[in-house]
Length: 354
Ligand code: TXA
Ligand code: MG
Image (tube, rainbow, N blue to C red; front, top):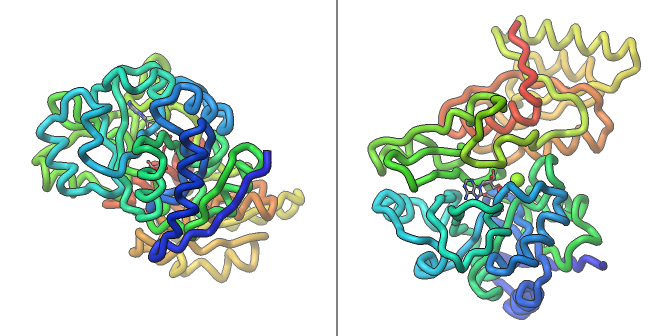
């Protein structure tokens, strides 16, 4: 299959391109498209055969359900069986935007889309290109992140092509994603709303709207044998570069000493090594002298920049064949909770305390 790549200007959307993309979806094909969080791999959410194709293209286990993207709130009642008051409040505050809600599902949504669950994850993105594409496609787009399963999510069309070229009909290139991390997922089917995956919409922001919110314990623990995380995707190794990523926590001078020691060991053995570091770190010059690749992901207190750059940085280490990657622990407040959540998974829970 030849994958067609088209560029879209978000401020001046070419509706003919959207109609073509929509026709691909309506005939059961797949189109990758930009959203404000990361690129999605879209298919018709109401067709079992389309969802099966998504799992095949991603190489993803079919018990890991897909998020259904809508463009109009009025479409929600076609797929969700009951809309709790807490959900209505969150939708009013954060839709369109980087928030996914879990509802009881209606039978319109095939089991293939929800991985056999009786619930459905729904999100209304804010990206104008995404909204236009969803409308042109009939209104219900199932879309996981457009990466091969386990890899860092793509924040540019180039990265989508890297993973999906030849496997899907079209990629819509809308430039770099503005947020860079996947949506916050909140389960509103129980008594207390529960965060299943942290994201740009923080626990504080949700508390301001609802008064309370819990975290699924699986968000912070590693995979616990016998315990089933409420978002099935959380149990898989994720977001990972091919090189071995280690997070180093402790006082700055101890961290630097530890990382520099490792860099020199690797050099002796001929292993290519890299460091991911905040742009304003005092140890930057030392790292630049000793590592094969140093990537600055943004100033320490600019967590929005770090979020936007994180996945691209992880993929750049692979581009340069880096075998061992080090990163200092980052502050985990606000969006930092989501950043650390992804980083810890990318590191396969390899955290060294010095
Ligand atoms: O920002 C995003 O959410 C991006 C863009 C493309 O919208 N999408 C995305 O999809 O991150 P994906 O498939 O990579 O992650 C979906 C997560 C998985 O962890 C999955 O287990 C969880 O959502 N999920 C989906 N449906 C669920 C359900 N019914 N109950 C619990 N978790 C669900
Ligand atoms: Mg994903």
